[in-house]
Image (tube, rainbow, N blue to C red):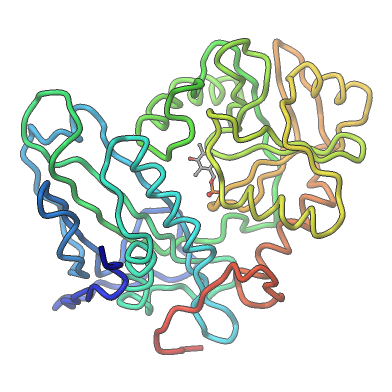
Length: 365
Ligand SMILES: *Cc1c(COP(=O)(O)O)cnc(C)c1O
């Protein structure tokens, strides 16, 4: 079989470009660009007809399978405009590979990885003027695959649509990196071994909502998820991976079946190892963390994800006890990690691991 790398992507430009919002007014995922990427799958025909078209609603029969049984996966990555005017994608190849991994977990036929990566480049090139200019802002790219069978039988679908939409997003931290308060829950679980925790799928997000709502009602920002069997070991925080520094050791839970393999997690572990830190991917119990909090060895704790890069944890609640981390201030290592990743993303710092790729588009300062 030949690689689809050379498959042409057709481009149909909109006749009615929309107004582009002011960088200062940007939030997260509220405004969408002029175009979208589409590709279809049909059994027997495979993935076909990759194209950039004007952004428009997807018209669906109410019996479309994704609406009933949630056979849907997505990913999320960003394009950044540097001071040099160049637009860079951060780790596009790894995001493309992960989208395919999520597809496999939900019985969705895989796509050509090169074609996925080219779909990101094609949509960003088509909407390059939508990549905002202010440092801290970016163009969020949301690739998604949905099942399109029109019938109510439960089975992997025979038809799918892959689409990519883009949204200019504001700086996550408008007034500097800010710590959050998180609540460990032992009443809800996010994922179990053998389940969907390793896939970026709509179902995991639906499963997280009620615990998130409870945490918010109790005055917290995010849920700290514990493992589904013993409700003892830390899994993730909200929809981010979790890391902490206890003494000299940086710890993050291992990729052992329930945790999403975050691109930010991977990048941060690489930087820490480059810098000579002791990094452990090991199970860490909530009791160990609470004890480290009490005896003062829990130095820093942070979540990692594309939206925020890092999200420092200033307070952790569990079974009625609260521990404060770093007096509610962003830790030195957390801040250094944030600055380093962001520097690479905007093309200001060296990129020794080749994480960024420049999108071929007119350079506008
Ligand atoms: C997307 C996601 C992350 C973070 O992954 P990044 O690739 O770093 O954005 C972590 N956990 C969950 C559950 C996620 O869905």
